[in-house]
Length: 560
Image (tube, rainbow, N blue to C red; front, side):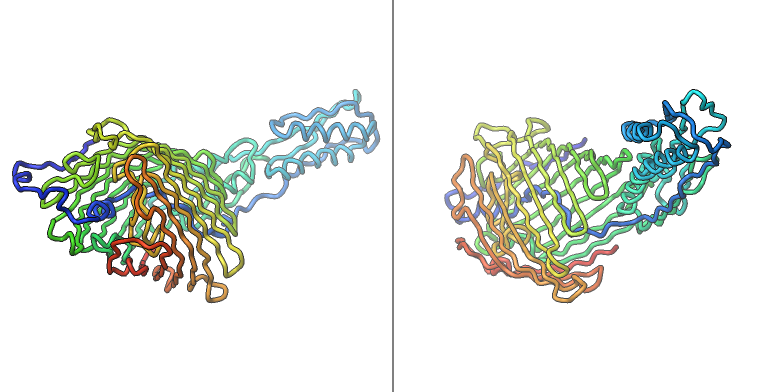
């Protein structure tokens, strides 16, 4: 991996720097507000209806009866051949039969055979069944029942254009066990239907070359590979210009393996930001490797600090692997391992300058190993999601190491929880809880920021930035129109509390607000949202931006 660094030439240090005690008050807070903090992974939104891929299955296999006399004969033992599953259940059926039939007729054996077949079908083994072999010698009281456990003879896939067939086949083969289970197969088809790369899945089981052998016919309609999002909002920090224009684009299946390349760009009056990324699944369970790069150049615009020419440059290189361990249409549990290389330099009058303890000549470098665990469970009316992430800062790749107690060596834990519940056709409750805990004093790059549109509305973006933090929020989404969520009014209450380890806590250290939002889904592609948050805790040094007045707006276009 190539790590780029910001190089400072001799001319950059030729100017004189004003003494720190002459700098305006609140300058450190403004710089921290403009420093990008780690973005937590997004948690799921409102649940979607369950999807039926339309699997059509064959009827129960039929076998011709043997030519046995319609007379009673003793039965001492029943032997079932060919079964590899349901052994205890089959044994229970046999024991019950022997207890009730010291003698039996052929019709009794047909009923016994049918019970075993129904046992298989009832447990999802739709192309498995039992039959009575011909030419049995029943004179010794021993009866044999043969089980044919069904399997897929072939999977035939049609409709693919960009996506390679191996991508679809490998995911269906996860359910291609012997005996074939309809429930497992339907889950595999539903996961394909939920895949954003696929628009529609239709499937049918047809007869194969022999009883118990079937062919799965799958027709795929792929989704559009190109996604485009354009938006405008005032969600950035007012110190660098809160009004932002952003654009994101992604293209899927560049190499036909479910891969995705993405890029984004955002700009305010004082911020220039872009990011690129590439992700590719490496196994049928959607274990995914992703790489990314982001770059942010910002400068302080507020009148009190504008003459000081304060700016910052930051960049992040990331490499991640995420592996689902449990994966069904309604639940997923996954583990992740990643490495981030984060670099930030702050400048005063075009010279590197440290505004807080820890950075050296304005430069902060962290090399972070991140271990994550995330879980989500959904049904038609609710979503529960949780995420845990351990971040370990290590002394590698030129990480900032010093004796101040605030450097690139640290350990921190982030926990996220979200609960979404549909209370009625017109009411949806959304609650979330985020926290960061650490025993160390952190560089600004890894600190917990709250205040702003995504945390505590009613305050400016990253109003408080601390080592540790706790955030709780609840909103109630009420649909103004029946049978649609296109127009919603959203009352909310939000609170955040932060504290430091080796440096003084901010004053105040708690933000609380309540407010009201309006969300209008103009078309499926275009949405507008306006929020007003009323702060319940006063803060000093309030500005004059819309954010400082508690107002937030956004307009988004997202192609699907």
